[in-house]
Length: 573
Image 1 (cartoon, helix red, strand yellow):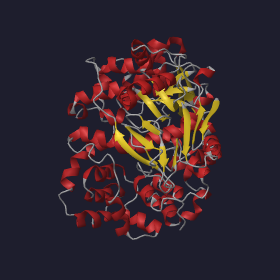
Image 2: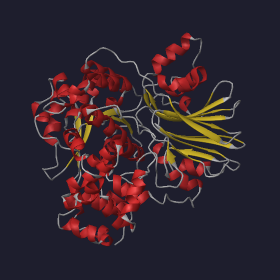
Image 3: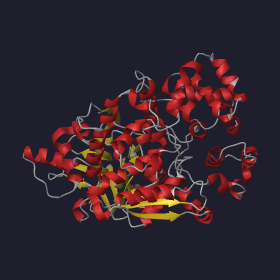
Image 4: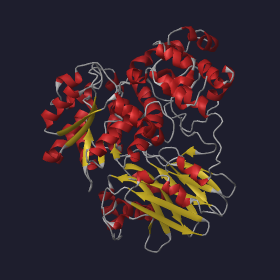
């Protein structure tokens, strides 16, 4: 797991500044490739083959193809064997060399063969073509921009663009977008002209013409006929390959517990799990974690996070936050603890709720069609007098999946966003209605739970959870892997159809597949992973400038996430 950056421009001197701004994500090594008009940079976190053989940028044997790569390819051994059958030989044990030779052999068709998480850039010298690519689920980030007609810049984090040009302008609409979503919706960022590459796509930039094109590479991915359990066990086994210390996050919920049981036969006595617990018993899930650890034989390493530690670490957590998010602080602390416990790689249960119906949105979907029968004017004007939960029905006046997502996940109503940013409400609605969404039709033909699943995967998971997990984990030099987002497992879930979403309890198909799961873990109300924010943030001087937002929060009339969102947006009232 690494950080990458690149510049195609007459002047590439800023490349080292860009690279070093992301040094936290690659503390083990640094590399640079330069020739007139192009520079590629890399910071390395060593996971597979810890030797210098994994140094990047990596060049082909003839020196004509250069790769910088961030990620892990879980099927690299199979692809390596396939390439060897074509007569290719390998000088290292790295998955990086497999990626490079796969691109040489298959070109951009190689990306659909990959099963893993990755963001990469390949420069082909004979054709003067730079190719960027990103994994199927959007697990690893990659941003790009064209600041001038003959300049192309890319990086793993948006902070790097400010090191390319300290005067880089802000996106004039970012506060309105952030206050509406609680995160920055892809492909938008807080910086003007800096966009996130669409998941499951590749970008080809032609140096001679200074033009680029983005294309999807996603095609149906093969899946086995095995059951859900066998599929997940196979996935976990694949993702436990590491030459660095590896373990799991164990929250005490269904998803991380199931992964722990999958890992037990593989890791045996080396099975290590990590978690956060709290003195506030309403938030601490230690009894559930201990039950799973005892049943699986895991060496569990809980860490008690206190209010004092939270307050002392908050500024560092804010610095780690590459893009604003109302949901990133929990990832900061759980990743910090895992790294402190000696892990370099950790498996996470992220993705299971989206794939198997674990969120309240799967129940709220029953209201969508009924609410959309109301005229737009009623939805936008009348619901603001309801409580916060139902105010979000106003978003259903926006057609398609964007409106549905905001009904499930929106932060502030456009009237509130307008008041906080000094705009008119009409301007906010106009902004939302005209958002560019490269995946707009991704769920257009789906219905029921399958539609909600696709929406949660596309918006909340991709734009918030995965980005939060990436920048918070890499801030601590930790690689987080997400077995539920393995391409084969995702394909296996899709085969199950809508029946998987209409069960009680939620995710019953997963519970039934793992009878060793302690009943106390699954036979309880759904609880998201949160910290005692409501209590810890109350009375903090940090929010003195937030005016009415602060007052409503202190009176219990506003959630902590809205207070935190207004603070991150720099709202002063």
